[in-house]
Length: 305
Image (tube, rainbow, N blue to C red):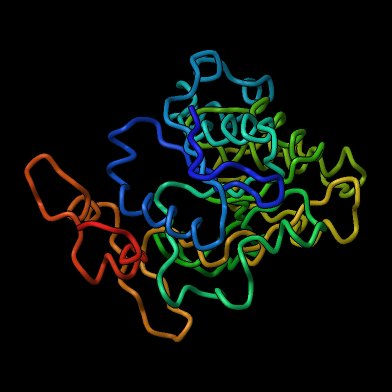
């Protein structure tokens, strides 16, 4: 279920994405092309998982989920969502010979060309080449208690260890995290399983005293809005679990769809999902891409219309 645009040579991490079906892939086609341009510029092999979550994982939850308050939240009593395909895909890709690491990005993410934030300061492969980190995610653990609840594109209010993009080295720590993440699978969202797995492993490795079992007695919303010990530079003080979190560690020039400030301070309008359909190939023959949008995604480097 994976395809590589370039044979892995054992030195560069692979860029991985996941789509549940062909319709979903073509719904985000400009972003997929953007990923190809991004990877080609950095000489990264590209892999795509195409398919739904296997039935055995879709229809069963982990024991932690079964006894947790999360299960009572709306939607958490149903099957596990296709968000967990990224976990399966990353685990399988680490088993491919010559793949020393994985950089994952969600299908609805992109790098803005030519002035992506921090592009010159931090390269996508720095986290891999520095050999200091085995696992990295974007995150923050700070809460602005006076801020309103976060709307789409708004500032973070609660704890955010996000799985929209991440880095994994071919290491025991990364494999253990992927195993634990799947073991705690629970309903429509993969984040709370990731939070539990990360904190449980950090405590098990002697890195933190925080007991992840506290999360079992919280709803998803309570877990999101509860502050916990920071994970930002855990790798500096805990060699058994070389974990890092922060936007600077994982492809900082790759952003989620929305409106983001460019490095030079100019706001770059990026299409939200409801607008994306206007620039994706459609059966009714609608235009594929307008020139400005095409240029912002770096697609001028591609041949053809």
